[in-house]
Image (cartoon, rainbow over all chains, first blue to last red; front, top):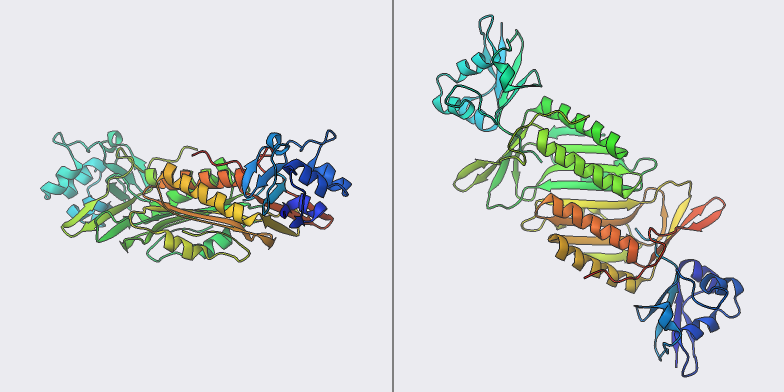
Length: 92
Length: 92
Length: 143
Length: 143
């Protein structure tokens, strides 16, 4: 399956964006984001805390719908999904 | 002395405006307005109640400054004065 | 800063550009227009000198209370059609809350105290619009 | 009704004219601009599809809560200079209180929940602007 990962703002600067991955079946939202940040210490640390959990302020979306951090560890990703990870918004 | 009387809105329609009067010395604000409305029953009744007092909602000004109805009976007019009498405002 | 009673219409876009003073983060515009209350036209009149002086007092008070960086108040007189601008208020401030509060203060005070009158012209004649505050006008702005 | 994320600037005067719907008595415009906080330029980015969907939700909610007759929300992205328009919100309503309240509701909600980010570019580099509500975003509008 193919999944697209989008980062925005500071996360985009650190990690790039529109990253196409082909994760194995059973991959969760959290393991997908861990995998895509694995080789980028600064990017990883911007998003995850020292226990490997999403930082409190990080916002997660799957196909444009909000995903709670608490649910991301058990939420499997599916072919064609668009995963978004971004810092607090600041428009207007 | 010369005094100008300005009416606005409904009062202007009934009584005209920019009326130049030459009242005798000792004329008060109230007697001046009574005089200028004397021959116009509808105009008079729009401004004064049956006791001859200014109606509660009528606004009085002398040279651009508010005059309270209670004071108008004792306020003498002076040469060059501009007297204004109008209904409640409705701008905006 | 433009504070004026006039017959002519207003270029709101140009006023907004002029309101973008150093330090401004937000501009708020209020545009009061002739509403289609089953009327043909509206006729407006003002006690002009007194109205301008009163608007200047309101602008000074709004600046003091809400830290506004710029204020325009243009109120039209004469005969206006449905949809035409009656009053245009443009303010800018460093932050949006100040701009909204300042704008609203100005229109609220204007409706209370500035000697301007409106007559709605209908097929059957006309009617003078009663003010928001029937009890009076020309009251000095609290300051 | 125009709800859009775009690079291009906006003709606010034209939007005001289009907001003058049947029954409208007042138009309120909020124009958020790049403030001169010692910056050279501002760079804006959006999660566009989600941002537009969120703005549409906010507009629907504002209409319901405040009886608005018309809403435009245009938020710009890309690189903007000091004084340029960032976000333009135009609403009309029958009465002014509804127009002010509706306009303010829209910008407050926009700042809370719409995925847009701003980076202030300075002589020494840049800094991402923290949001009004650091705790989150993308929360659905209460409805």
